Length: 80
Image 1 (cartoon, rainbow, N blue to C red):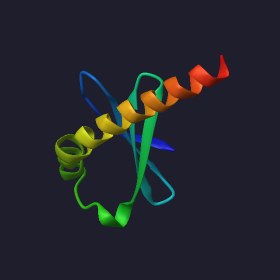
Image 2 (cartoon, rainbow, N blue to C red; image 1 turned 180 degrees about the vertical axis):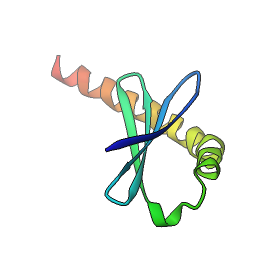
Image 3 (cartoon, rainbow, N blue to C red; image 1 turned 90 degrees about the vertical axis):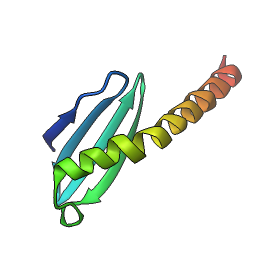
Image 4 (cartoon, rainbow, N blue to C red; image 1 turned 30 degrees about the vertical axis):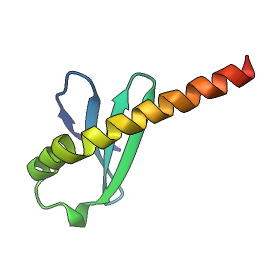
């Protein structure tokens, strides 16, 4: 897997990797991460992909991170 681009952000670690004819968009927040796989054939311009990630994907990804954290807190309550 090859790192193609790191998108600067003050809250998230956002990276685009390339592997097996796919771009893998990795978004990290703390100890949680989300991955999105996109065929390289579907992406003509990485700059456009970056804008779409920032504008549309990050807000919903943030909501998912909150849900993930909430789920993890519930799990921890039941195992300790």
